[in-house]
Image 1 (cartoon, rainbow, N blue to C red):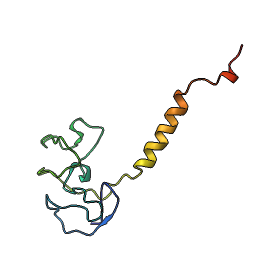
Image 2 (tube, rainbow, N blue to C red):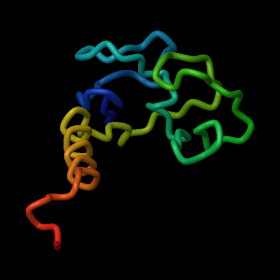
Image 3 (cartoon, rainbow, N blue to C red):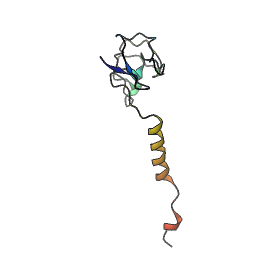
Image 4 (tube, rainbow, N blue to C red):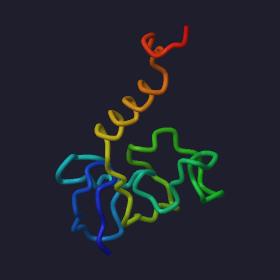
Length: 104
């Protein structure tokens, strides 16, 4: 199975199953973490599709979850570029009205 790091997108060539202490060789992110799991879903309660799983408070740190299954497409990309684009869009939406265009 070909995997990518959930944080930096690096291609990972690791033996499965991943150990709890496994880290990305490029960015050192924990890999046995919720963000790397097939059951992770930010839109769900507890952010997990597995209802029997115990709640994990930090989704980016290594954990002991027995339901962990690595997700090949865990990397979502964007990072700072997406944040900046969203901030620019919000600024445009909420900036004060242009006084030169107002009707008198």
